[in-house]
Length: 615
Image (cartoon, rainbow, N blue to C red):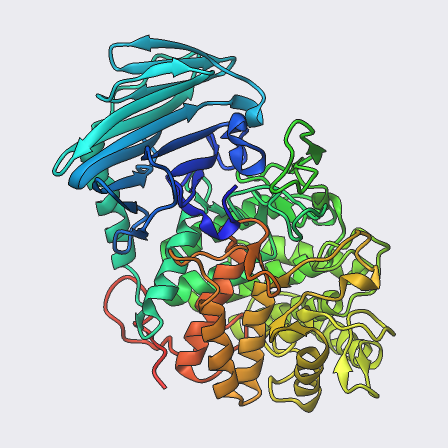
């Protein structure tokens, strides 16, 4: 089984596939990110569905890369008989979903083997397969898949096998198309024309970026990854392309991340706006507004890619799990949790777009007022917190800080943007929350903020106190918190979310270090005036990316492995922001455009090209 860091991603802005270094597509959900998988070998064995295309001699690739600033994956092998490469990509969605693989002979003559095992409904259903003049047709219930190729195909052991030899200069295409079985077969796709179209799409998209400098390639690859996790019809961005990749090998901390979290809103908007992607930022804002519309008391922490509210969690017992990490889960019960910080995140994100896009007339103001009015009556409740604890609810310090953020952003909207509202009431609430947090959420003996009121535990979310503006980044209490987290909440210099051994999360076992938290430490160190330490940590984090620049959710310092779902948006958002802040040499508030964003830039964006990594 491939390691998590062995997977690269391709996608068509509706769904995404994960391709291993062995040339096997081990994960793909069709037609959308949150649909049932037709390839699920990643969570079991090849019998659960995969599409292998590699030299017959086997083994992992010699080299792979994305072609320039695109999502076209190039995987190359050097064998005793010659060299060959495979181009994998998904064209931006037309009337059907296509996965295209082109085998190209580079030198010599290389024997190739293809093995297509379609297994619909997460590896459970073997389709009925028949041959036709273009390849094969596979049908099961509502699903139909069509494989077109000039290569020879034959059925064996409930799989479609292709064995052929490719010589220097030859190109052999394979086009796999999915469509509803009740509809006519979609028109055939020319693989070479689709390759040109796909390259052109991504090159044009990347060409809109305003990022340059030393860290430019790493930041741009993260932005491309975030775009790949975007569901184009709605503008929503999924947390990851996968479900149930474990936070501890063999453990039960396996969750479905193919949904959209409100908490990602501000981080998403910051990274997109600063890089110049105002269209994407506006689309995400509109998704956010549609999702939260309705009764403010019914606000969820997460939604489906189309805004669906019901995300029931259930298990797939026929899948063994990644390296035996069971159970495999679909859906996410955390959708029903109370996490008070999301009200603050939503109002923070909408404040950012108001400030960045210069929206004087805010068409979402009534929604924001309703959200704030509900939070005024709810903020004193205990909740499940940022990390979706499945243990007893607590008064988490971060949740209270984000309630302060909500009140602060509403005051700002009245004072700065002239929007109507009971500003004095909100101002008084903001002061009351801050006073309470400083009294009950701060441990004077340890000189640090703590995870929950009147406790002594630490939590990585406390690193965000300076970022959201609750206190200045160089306040002694903030710096004391940074020091305490470095002493007590790190492993090999990387930050853990909290101490799972404390039992607060209601789950057995442990986990790796959470990569987003280490990027937060980069920002906090920079805010404390420790730029050298911040830069060193940032570059250590860059070294944890896989060979094509991707990060999962966590890292295991002991085994030197990535852990958790991949690619993880919550790891790539802060990579972008840490790089930008290291360039400017200063941190900034989460609801303000980056310090490098100055007026007077030509083009549709209000932002110039930040030059990253200059010291």
